[in-house]
Length: 299
Ligand code: CP
Ligand code: NVA
Image (cartoon, rainbow, N blue to C red; front, side, top):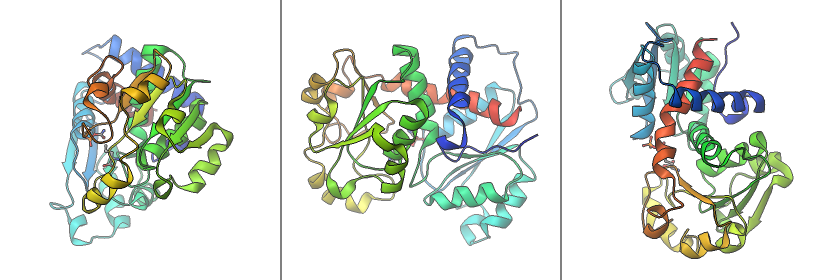
């Protein structure tokens, strides 16, 4: 059996990602409690940062599939005391069937994958958040159909979510308009690899023109709490509000990976308004990751 990881959306082919989204929708709509493909299987979950959705969706997903998950915090394991990643990856992967990591540095996940003998899943790093994109794509497909050829608008920080949207533009073949302050632009090599699908704008309304989906995220990510004040100033003109949504297509959806700061990156009117799909989007973390676990573990 070929070992596969999910450290980035680019680890799967476009066709595999599409099949996975279709499977997630099927698992959601036809839940069969007797289907227990993970019976006796264990997922190890290493969290260097906080989480609500990622932890619960992976843990619940494994339980629903008849398996189990172990929550590991560096505070309670030898990882926090400096045991080498290489050794930890070899040891942990000798005891579990897959490992999910949420880490500060992206290299922690790729190093882990290199030394692991079981699939490694990126549950968010400073660079990427691919699991969230599975849920976002599932949500769009369910509500509006295929996203190929559509226009998606990203407003705000060129962060881990933005990078994953850029990778998604490549894999799902949509156009991505980005509006962000110049000094907070996304990683240039990730942008370059996506070619002409990516366009930059100085104003949110220009970026949102005729958009089918508008997305944003917090101005200060986990680990950037000290920069909150500085970022509030830099991002003040980059809020998704009614004006932004009015520039978009009338049936455009609004998404946010959550947690959100109402009144900062998005107005309460928009995030709690009729175009917002944040709660189905959050729920789909469960279904999309069940499809991912099945793909990686039951191959
Ligand atoms: N969207 C997301 O990953 O949420 P958590 O930080 O709660 O896991
Ligand atoms: N960009 C955010 C996403 C949280 C799910 C962060 O990294 O904190």
